[in-house]
Length: 502
Image 1 (cartoon, helix red, strand yellow):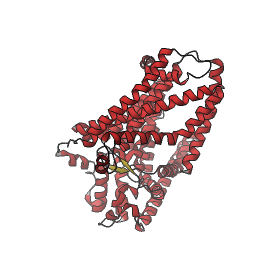
Image 2 (tube, helix red, strand yellow):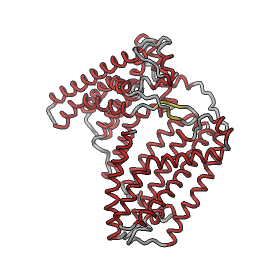
Image 3 (cartoon, rainbow, N blue to C red):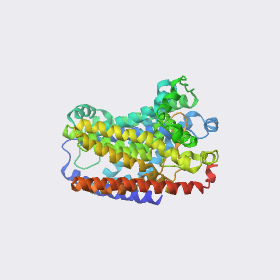
Image 4 (cartoon, helix red, strand yellow):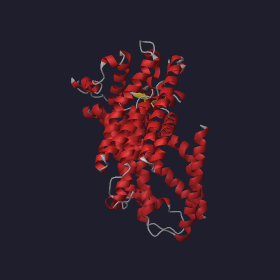
C-alpha cells in the first residue's frame, strides 16, 4: 500500500511538471494543428478500452457467488454496479495523479477554465472507456462460451492476441507511413475530436463548434449505448449455457508426447506425475505461465520497433532469444512453488509426493518446455542473421547450461515472495498469479550469474577469456540453482498451511 502511494506520488510529480510546461507553451504559442491532441485522445480511448475489456474477461465479468447476487438484484442492476465499481476503482488509483496533473496544466495556462474543461472531459472519457470496455469484454466472454473452437483454444488465442496488440502498438507508435495512412482518416472521426474538446478551455486554442459538438456526442451517446450493450451481454453470459468441446482421443496423447523422451527409469513416478501435470496444465491455459512469456513479449516489442526503424532484423536478436529462453525455463513452473498449488499443496505433499520429488518435477517441467525453446529460438534467429555456426553453437551451449540452473533460482524467489492471490480466467476457472517481487528477485539472481560472460562479451576480450567467463556464468547459475532448490526443499519440509487456504 505504501509502495503504491509512493509510486503514485512520483508519477503525479512527473506529470505535474510536464503538464505545467506544456500548458505554458500551448497558452503562449497556440497550436498550429490539432493532430497531436486527437492522436492522444484516440490512444487513450483504444488503450483504455482494451484494458477494461481485458479486466472484464479475466476478473470483473465473473461474479462472486453469482447465484446469490443475481437472486438479490436484477442482472441490469448488477452489471451497472460492476461498471460503477470499475469507475470508482479507476478514480481511486488514477484520481490523485490525474488531478495533480490537470491542476498543474491549469496553472501553466494561467486560466482555471482550462483545468475545469480538461477534468470534465477526462471524467467523460473514463465513463466511455468503462462502459464500452465492459461491453467488449462481455462480448468476448460470450464468444468464448458459444464457440467450441474458442473454448478449446482460448488460452492460445489470448497469447496470440496479446502479441498482436504489442506489435500493433509499436507499429503505430513509430509513425510508419502505412500506420499514418491508417490513422489519418481516424483523426477526422468524432472520437478523435475529444482532443479538441479537452483543450477547449485553453487560451490561444480554437476549435470548430461542429467538432466540439461531435466530441460531446461521443460522451453523451457512448456511455448509455455502451452500458446498454454491457447489460444485455452480461445477462447472456451469466445465464447462458457454455458449449462443451467434443472429446478428442488424441488430446491426452498429444499432451504427453512432449514427455515421451523421459525414460521411466530416470525419474521417480511421483516426479514424472508432477512434470506431466504441469505441462498439461500449461497447455490447457498458457496464462498460468505468463512470466515465461514476458521476455518474449519484451523481445517482440523492441524487435518490432527496431525493424520498423531500420528495416532489418536486429543483430541482437539471437542473444535476446537465448536470454528469453533461459528466463522462460526458470519462470514457467518454478516461480511460485507454494502458492501455485493453492489449497491443494498440503494434499500434494501428503499423498506420496515428497518435497524433493515435487520440486524436481517443477524443475524438469521447466527444462522440458524451456530448453527446446531456448535452443530452437537461438538457432533459428542465428540462421536468419547469418551468424557463423560456431558462434550459434557457443550461444546455445551457454544458454542451455544456464537454463539448467534457472528453475532453482526461480524457486528461491518464489519461496521468499510466495503468492496465493487468484486470477480469474475465461470459463469460470482461476489460477494463482506469481508475485512480481519473486520475478524481480529471480531476475537479479540470474543477472548476477550472467555477469561474467556479459562483461567479457561487452568488453570484447579474447576467446580464452570469453570461454572462461562463459564457464563461470554457467557454474554460478548451477550453484545458485542448487542452493535455491535446497533452500526451497527445507522450506516445504517445514511448511505450515495458511489458514486462509484450508
